[in-house]
Image (tube, rainbow, N blue to C red; front, side):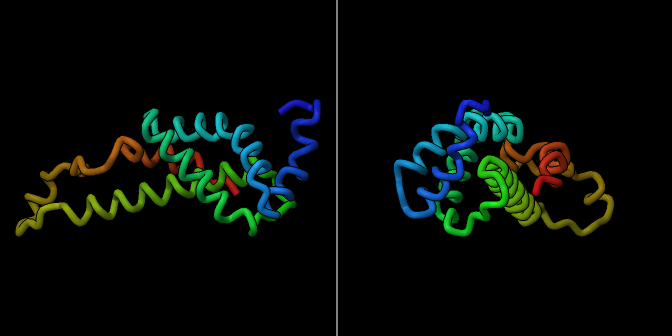
Length: 138
């Protein structure tokens, strides 16, 4: 953001969006979508997944904007929503992967089985790097 008014009018736009003004939310969307999409791409390493994650972020923001705390920046709030949506998706994918693992009788078979069942999407192939980098965002 620059100092030519882009950040100064944010409180007014956020206030109007909280009051239900669709044009104000649209202006916030147009302002922050490129940044959120770039962040989502860094998390997912996939254009398709980044598109989905960015869209989910703004849908969540639109639904929850009434609870937005004005003492934090709207941009940081969006980044936190995106990080939380990504973590939630990774957890769901991990649960699905765990549920689809074959049952085995012997310990040897369990140790020989690959850790990744291949059922997770590209979005969560490296949760340690992606999820750790967003873990401290508040």
